[in-house]
Length: 426
Image 1: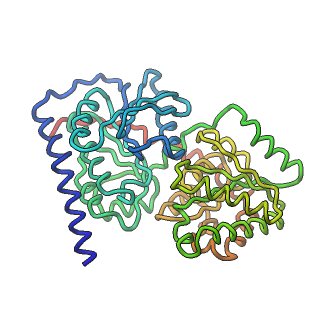
Image 2: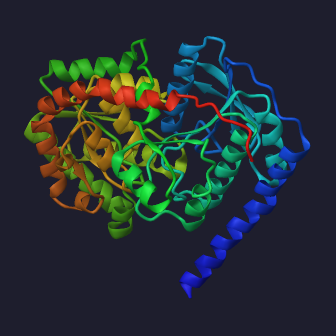
Image 3: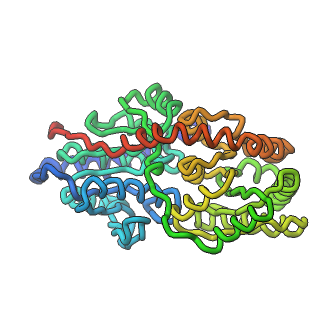
């Protein structure tokens, strides 16, 4: 019964996309003159990973920053438009205020997209982890329709490097399997590429996440950096910690939030005492439902109650600043993919809390052992302490390994910037 119900839901998603997006775009292509574009592209449209609030995730801001700064380095005249649900502006590190234009919801959004894309020279999609349908299959259906429409107008479309889990949503696979061959598909790790090729059957290329191209902030972040320096003067090694409700959902469901935080505090206290550590708590998503802020503040209080005072909560709202800070630490413990990317991109080793098939391929890029990952359910046991101790013991070797592979990974990330040419065939 449940399978039958899901099938009907999936078919409704596909039918709604045909009626509200695909057919209107087809009619617009048939009735309107196709745009004539200059040889040098300067105007770029970008579909946000979160169209409802493009700047709420620091990971998304990191990808925006990396892409825009890299394109502007190639052409200083580059200008950008982010596609979302409502008209406003966001501040992108290294770029400044950037407009968000409503070209998404319903048939009205479809018509707005057609008008908008004809004024741009290329389209980019923030792939990350949304294209397997985990966060909405209708989202993927519309993205594919927009990409196909773009290339059929002769405007290149690129899906920036994304991961692809083992169980993608059926409407997402349905849409992706119908991608126009001129749409450039970048996948950010080899296991995801293997799954995508097997399940979807569309040509794609290996890259690394575009966020690896984001530069660190250059200006000192006074108070947190002073705290890091003071901990080192006391003979303590600073380690970054991020907890979030998304990665730890199975553990929260098992024991509840309060017990989980108490367990983390006890394990971190023991690791801190055994290894002379100090902990910087770093939220990387500021949405209330993400849990980063509330969980880390609760962890701070729990550690203080247990008598471990070498801890500091750092409220930083820009990804380039977080990348600068995390580069000053010896180790990062997190379940946030883009915090891991910021850490590895700075040479700092990580212990990653894994979920959604995303971390295996990232570690492969650096030939790092999966021993330095941990599942949410393992976090409920003393395995957490063992993993922290092991990651700490191997931090110097892992830093050397990361730094040796980083130039190749950045070169793979740069492949996201290649803008293909495309014809006008329907």
